Length: 230
Image (cartoon, rainbow, N blue to C red; front, side, top):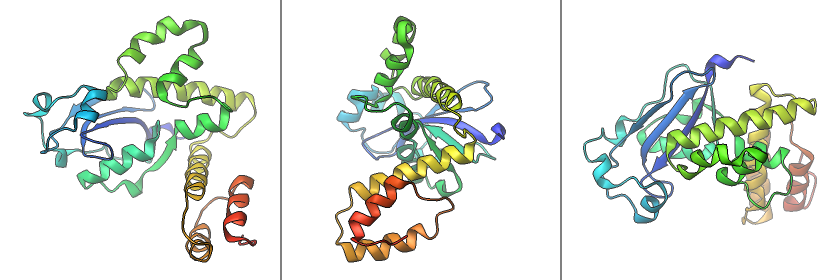
């Protein structure tokens, strides 16, 4: 596993699917957490402010969101629902297509079956076991990018430990493929296009995938297309 090209990441935004106002990242190998705030150049939505408690005053002298930058040489980006982070980073004209996402939300759904919640706070308490007091300090400070990054790191290490004990492939490329499979399954579950349009769209899409489709996704495709398409 080449760990030098991976980072943990978390963002806070000025609204849902909005501009990045806080970005935290850390090299997979360790080191200091880089955490910076940015001015979205619009008012921060109160619903978002209620969650992360970053106010307009907090970012009034911060660099513009257009100045958000990722570290050089990154290939894999690890985060909880990391697709959201990458989508929001794209508002800062960052080409996120060059990154391979590894999502701890997707991994948790794969490893920890049938939990009532897969939110980062819930999972953090869940994996803490008898050490919930130790994790409480971090969870109480959640929705701060640097804190959520630390919780994500702990969750990732826990999930990888379980997967390795089960003999699963935990290489970055395998974890990325599992993430992509999960995202595709979610898209199929929420698809509302007519079957013939889905057939044309997804058949062309899946032929471009660099990994085999899981049985679950094949079943979704077959139900949607009403015939074998793969």
